[in-house]
Length: 133
Image (cartoon, rainbow, N blue to C red; front, side, top):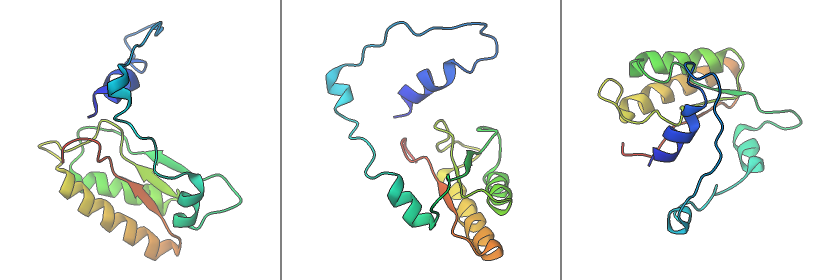
C-alpha cells in the first residue's frame, strides 16, 4: 500500500509546519516482513539505461496530483527530451479518477519512445505500482 510513504514521506514537506521531529516509529515485525527490499541494485539500472561513468540524472514528475494522463506524459517527455536519464512517479501517484494508471502508462510509454527516438539515448520512466491500479 501507499500508507507508509503517504504518512512519513510527505508530512515533513507540509509548508504549514515550521518544525517537526519524528521521535519514535514502531513498525510491527509482521508488517516489516512484507517488504522484501529492491530486487536489484544500481548496476542493473545502469545496464538498462546504458549509462556509466557518471551519476544518473532523473526527477520526480510534479505536480504529483492534478494533471491529466496526457499532460503527465507531456511532462515526462519534456524532462527526458531535455536531457534527463529517467523520470519517476511520486510515491503517492497511483490510479485516480482523473488519471488512471493504464492511461498514464500509455502516455508515459509514448513519451519514453519519442524522447529515445529524438535523442538516440535509452531513457527510463519508473511507474508507481505499489497500490491498486
